[in-house]
Image (cartoon, rainbow, N blue to C red):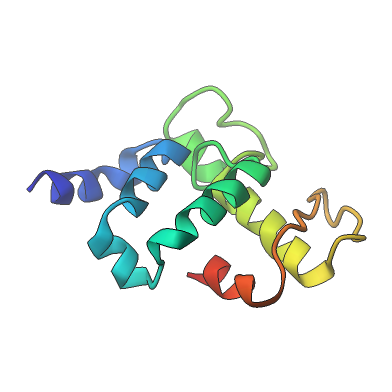
Length: 117
């Protein structure tokens, strides 16, 4: 029951990296999304490298009325970090900033499938 309550509280939570990574430690959740236990260290590295910290996006942060909720770019949010990863995957290591987003270029080849999950 505790897991269900935590899931229901997600929309009102800060969505901190530690919270999401805790969910990835749950075997049933990893199985649902096709994430192997051996993929966890890679996901940890990507999340850290893309500088994801908390908040789904700018609007989510603002709704929580916490410091940093007024950042128009949403830096360090999940959306911003995922955009960095996808941009780096699509454009490669020599890509320049695109609309204020610096590509995170550590993801390539078949690893992109894991990013999608």
